Image 1 (cartoon, rainbow, N blue to C red):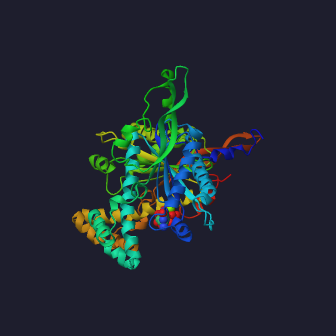
Image 2: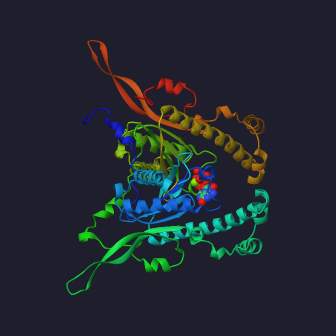
Image 3: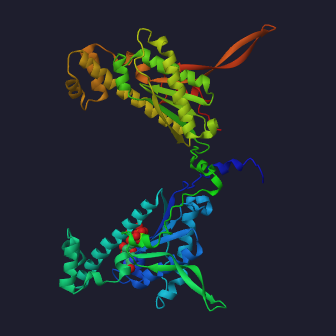
Length: 519
Ligand code: GTP
Ligand code: MG
């Protein structure tokens, strides 16, 4: 059904394409393999058959997926490296990961009997996976080195641990014996107590397994002059070599080769770096902006403490300008140097691109702040440029938006009460530290009593703007446009209004049901 009314649901499918020109590593790991290995009686600490089975699956992966350039495995995990240039499934993370774990698991089950002819699978094996991006080949090498170092450390520990257990110690005793031991000490335990030379253990246990394509020359035929005709062939190879040092990589420079050439001088590929930061559809969007370095800014401009009515009115006036300018904003709430702007769940403003929405709002707000400065603070010059930072958050339900706003208003009340007490104490001669100590651990009631008894201030009679912050919204008012035969003709007008009302309880929302109306 083309263009049906249901098609909008497609927008929920987030774009999970991994950034271009990055190496991709998909690491898969056996789920609950501790249990799986014990019910299938894997040898401890290393079961050769189990490891060969893993390697055989990895090898099948390289044969099936040409985009995999290298794989490294240890225990129940395998990492698959995809070339930076890979366009496999348009680099979509979930597609890559799911295909890899799925193919690997199928291979594991299919090949099981080949490696465990005398054991039936008693439980289904399965793997989880994730994709990580590395911008440079060097980081891929460091990633692989990290895994190989881990393999060595775990293997040495596990070898000692299981030898101690097999020799009669309990697991707890073996743990205690190994606690805090260094590499050298562990090797000595193995040699002296068990006659095992760690260096002589199989390379597969000590170094894990590498799977890659080895370039080999093959003689395909002998020509008429009896000369061999050779051909290069890539053979998927499993080896247990050091990949921490440079030797392996020097010998196989083509594996992690970084190709800087460009096809036909085509620069267009750089476009792919522009990540899509579209916010999810059908979510309410809250853009919160916050003054940068406003502590300094407010003291430099001698704002009154704790609340400067002019500065707060300036903020609200800027917020009103935003509501006038951007009809998409349905509500705004401000306190101190911050303002939150709510956009409807259906808004398609800036195609919901987060960075564009946030930057437009902070920029317009900052502009208005400078332009209107003289109007609200006529006796002061702007000594420094004010600027704001912002972020966007999505809320799937109107109820959560209300809770967000309630949280902000509650916070406003708590801070205002504290700050009012604090500055009254300071103004009355206390140092800031003394004032802090006075207020430590006091409850709401105590603070109100302090204000009343010490300073004759009734907290409840302080300006609503200080106690409740500022709400900016469109108020629907009826206007009589003309009289038609004595009967008034009315029109509904939306007027951007600043008010300092309670938005924690239901009253305001009941009176303005159209603001956070869910369609
Ligand atoms: P999740 O991955 O979180 O689901 O847990 P897990 O139980 O798979 O543990 P984890 O991946 O951290 O570790 C792998 C576990 O697999 C090890 O702790 C071992 O118990 C087991 N294992 C892997 N290879 C072998 C092996 O060759 N022999 C034995 N005996 N156990 C192995
Ligand atoms: Mg595991």
